[in-house]
Amino acid sequence: MMSIYATPRGRRRLRRIGFASTLTTISALLAVGCGTSDTTQAGGSDEISDTEFDLAEVREDAKDEGEINVYNNSSSVEDVAKNYAKKFDIEATGTKAETSEMVEKVTREVDADRVTVSVIQIEDGGALEGQLLSQGYVQSWVPSDLESKIESENADPLAYVWRALTIAYNPDVYPRGCPIDNMWELTDPKWKGHVAFQDPRLKTNLLNWFIELTESGAEPLAKAYENYAGEELDSDEDNAGWEFIARLAKNDPILTDSDSDAASATGAAGQKNPPLSILSSAKYNDAEEDGNSLAVCKGLQPWIGVSYPKYMAIVKGAPAPNAAKLWVHYVLTEDGIAPELEDGGYSANTDVPPASENDPDGLTDFENQLLRLDPSHNLAYWDGRQGMSDFWQVNVS
Image (tube, rainbow, N blue to C red; front, top):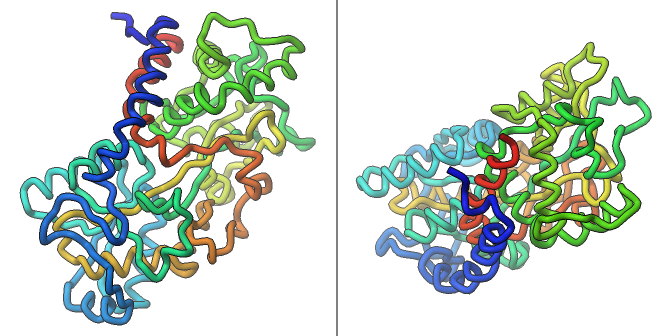
């Protein structure tokens, strides 16, 4: 059955729900689910407060709580856990997990009052706000001694690091630089069947990016089209964002199960005509070890990709609440965030250097080269996700 979002009228409905009606409810939901250091959501005695936060005292109390378990979308959490354990003499286990796994684990454990995980670090702000925060399963918390270092957009809920998805090429095959100058070329017949990325229906950050392309990204995409085609965009879609997504879906993209697969499709040695790819900034730093050759499509109009926040929250009923607070504080420092910055990213703490020395050339200017996902749109992304997935499905089939 065709989705209601398969028609222009349906798509307008998706946008209206996602970025108008939804945003009018955010303040009410925040009152329930998005506490900062002085406010908390449902949880009673499980609430984390830091009105009298003292790092030394929390550190001592944490030693009496035993092991802390942390779930993260990135495997870098394993190194953070090792560093944390060494620094604070507290046993710590870091586990890489997909967002769906984290959400299921947290909700099941909290509902059963048998919580084993104390902190989650999650890329999906929609799931965080739409499911976990709004229903009181987790709490966003910012240490009071670092509040002045965290910009307001990153504080509620706590977005502790910013990552990127970028358009990549194989520099061994294209030594003079990226073979395209404009994002619209990804929809050109020349690149039909030669653009690889994780299936958006499996990667929520891609769906969020697509949604933002139909909002703040629509006008820049329209201007970029004029530069690409030499004429104004003529489309039956609502705007240039919808048109770009439809054309990309219809251009026979290589849909993979992971960013690693997309990176290999582009970067594997011995290729004469490798595809371009859209992948996580972490894959550039993994490239040598994985045997791939990858480079960022610098200077692409209107963007080289999208930047997105990654969040950190303390689970309701955390078995190690002080160790959890200590973990949050540690990850907000230069020492604590270091392993994750090696995967590419920027700390939300303004005192931490803005980029890893391992970041690839082209990722040093987030403001001008990357479309930025807006943390205040998390609930809109959450509400609009199914409609965008349906729209993609209709066009990619």
